[in-house]
Each structure stands twice: as C-alpha cells, then as structure tokens.
Length: 433
Image 1: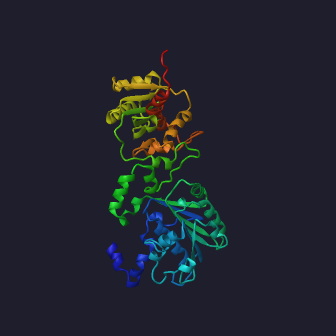
Image 2 (image 1 turned 135 degrees about the horizontal axis):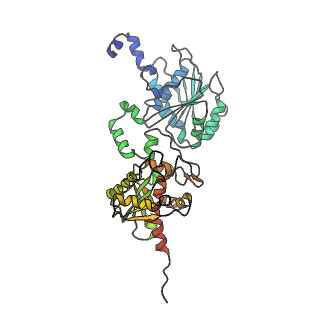
Image 3 (image 1 turned 90 degrees about the horizontal axis):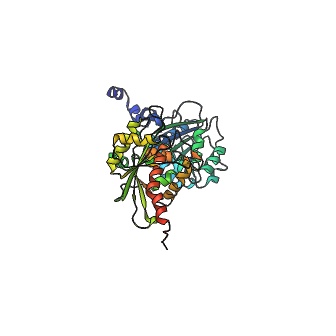
C-alpha cells in the first residue's frame, strides 16, 4: 500500500512530501479543531514539541503558493532568552528554518532579530527576561516555548495578551515541558485553551535508543521522570509541607549501611473495594554519632489498595521480610487490638509496636517535614504515589483525594526512627544525690 502510494506521485509531489507535516505528524503535534485561543503542547523531553511549534508557525504564515499569505502576518517568537529562541526555535534541528521548503524558507535578519518570509510575513524574536519588550508591538499569532521554566513567566504572558490584537482570531501555540507554576495552571484552566500531550516514548523513532534506556533507568518511578519524560503536570498544593523540588533534592540511588529499618502501617478503617488504601512504608536510618548527623532513607512504598485485612497484613509482613526490618509500627486508632490480631494471624512472632494518634495529621507531619528541610531524609526511586500525597499535605490539612494513608505511614516510621529517639537522646539525665 505504501509503495503503491509513493509510486503514484510525480517528481514534484515527491519533493514536496517531506514538508507536508499533516501527513507525517503524530496526533499530539496537530492543532485541535475548534474555536480556541491557546494551544498548549505538553510533552516529555524529545516528544516532538519544538517541531510541532515550528510547523504551526509555518501553517499560520504560509499560503497555498510561496507568495500567498496565510492567516497570520505578524508572529511573536518568545523563549527564555533571545539566544534560545534563535538556537532552538529558529535554527534548531526541529526549528522553523529546518522545517521550511526552499521556496518558502524565511530570511533571518540578525540585526533585527526577526524572520521574514517571501510573502512578507514577519516573526519577531523576544526574550522572557524582558517582558516590557512586548509593550508596543502587535501580533496576530505567537509561539511560546518552555514557558513553564521562565523566571518572569507571568509578566511576559500578560504583556503578550495585550499584544495579540491583530487579525480576526489571534492565537498562541505554547510548547512546554510541564512544571507546577501558576501561570501555566491558569492557562490550562482557561475555557479558550486546548491541550495535547505525549510522553518522550511517543517520539522514540527519532531518538537514540541509548538515550531512552539511560533516562528511563535513571528517572523511571520518580516525580522528575513523570514530569520530564511522561509530560505530566504534577501539582504541589499551596502551602504544601513538601514540594516536588525538595523531594527531588532528597533523591539517592542507594542507601548506605543502615542501623535500623522499620515498616510502618496505617490500616484502613474498613476492608474491601470501598476502603481507603492501606499505607505501608519502609524506612531505614543511620543513627550513629550526634543527633544532627542522623539520616533516614525511605526505601519502599508497599501500600495496597482496597484490600482486606488479611491482604494488607500479609503485605506488611512481606515488606518486613524483604527489607529485614526489625519492627512493624502500626497505628491502631481505628482498629484497636484487631490490627495486632490480624497481623499475628499472618505471623505470630512479628514484633509489633502499636501507636495511637493523639494529635492531628498536620501536627504529626510538621516535625517530619522539618527533617526534610534540614536535608536529613532521603528517598529511593519508585515512590511516586507516596510523593504525590506528600505534595498535597498542607498546613491546612490534606488537599488530595481520599486519605493520606501513605503519608501517615511515613510519618509514623520517621517518628519511630528519628524523632522519638532524638528526644530521648537530648533529654537531660538526672543523677541521684
């Protein structure tokens, strides 16, 4: 079928085929239909966002023939710096010049930082470091690249909105790796915004296999990997006790030799399909030397969803065996002695420490969050679900879905390993008189 199609084309059509992006594009690289003002292309690194943006600009300024006009005559090209616009959006391997056929290729006027097409259309370059540069010019279209990492994103975006005042329907294409910044969230929430997205893997045919293997091995199962490779927008709640940035800074590939390891469990109130998750978290610690030198390592999240008591008890005991934990710390506020009984049905000899929550979740979590601020808690990879809950825990309470079972288990484990022993270590000894 493919060979028959190619054989049916004449020489001119064959020469034009590489430049017919609608023919080659992946679904996320094509603008959605409908009456939209902003098109956001969110994707992982190398997912083809730049090519999609460059081709969209071509579609706006080009007509059917080389000298025919398109829907737009004046385009703004905005990146973090002028150099990045020039090197990526204009001259890059997937930039405008590389995508343009010879008879439609625009001229780069370096002294004026702009592209000029044979039909008279102009694309002007701007830096997000200088939002005021957009005060005065006017446009009927814009391509905005990597907006989520601009330091002055809000100011630049606002200035652009005032400049998009030409033509019947001025539009903007935004190509960005998602990051949890207010201006991007506001754009996504606007009713005039449409979104397409794709992971890095979607464009694997044009990426080095060694690159994919390396980044997947290094970042799979981390929040950074979900953001930079899967193109997910990971939200931190306002006033969160933990942030994505802090958790990425806490990342390690492997723990050192540990002095203690515990498994903490926060059992659900009920079992079965309607129950909350059962939080089961494995944490180890190095507790040699002064308290300020102690370090904790979150090793695994073995939580289970909608599980019966026998299932979550078995999962907790299995985590202990896997990691060689010395103790199972179990919250028993809801289940009382039943929690211990269920666990001992799985293993009668398992060492259990039961704990009761006498304070609210936030109050218990705050000293644990302080340990992270001090750089004293580290995370192994593969803790995405736990970290999502952590970033939804705020000083006002949990703002995620359901109950923060995984965070509760984490907090109990770190209280057992770091906070309670430190309090005892600091407590002054009273000598008998």
